[in-house]
Amino acid sequence: MKKLNEMALANAFAALGFIFYAACFVIITTAPDLYKSIAQSWFHGVDLSQIWKGNQDNFLLGLITFTGSSWISGWLLAWFYNRFSK
Image (cartoon, rainbow, N blue to C red; front, top):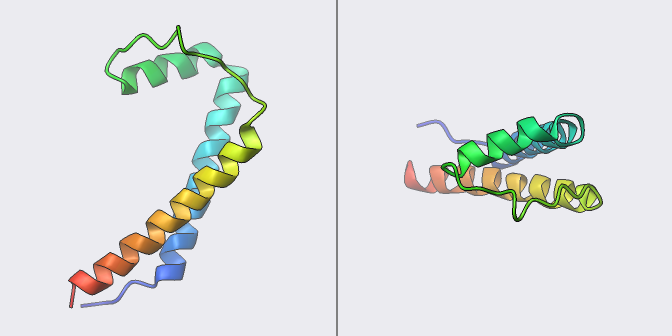
């Protein structure tokens, strides 16, 4: 069975995480009602209006941590796949 390259998959996950997080930021700043509707649908209709802050000040921290988490997830996925596929 073919082995996955941990670094390549981790980098791909990080790139996707960066793109997704940046896209969410654009939607939050340009169409906050659309973002709230999407978020509410993902949380099974829970009313998020009471906890909604819409704060854009922590964008950079969120971008860095989400991208880093995505990278770690991609690396771990490839690592586990390679171990379990032996």
